[in-house]
Length: 132
Image (tube, one colour):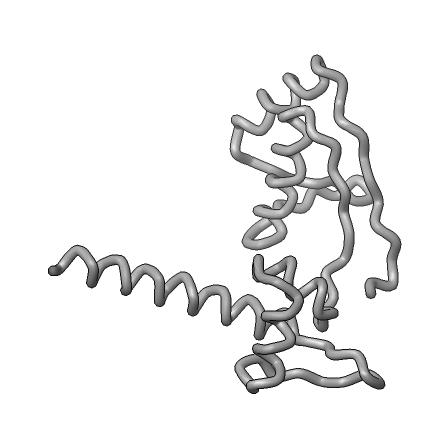
């Protein structure tokens, strides 16, 4: 669980959302901290752009911290699979697991690596199907 509570920002008014969408077309996101401009790069730039794009579409947005270790429920949601399948993957050793008492904790990076491997595997399988 994150040390910081999630924060939800309601959807912008339509005029404000339209102005934000127009500003995002400039493709140059910078933030000001104590009067100093900081250009965002890499993952930070992508995350802020995604947040702003959602607001520009009129969506409400919730920001929360990502934990390094996940509960079974969090891992299942991230991977798009059932809780019971997560337990199976940890029991058979596909996903390394650590226990906190009787509760399983799975590293986020292990879940994301497995998801990426599944996508790669599915891509190879579909290209083989077209070879026949």
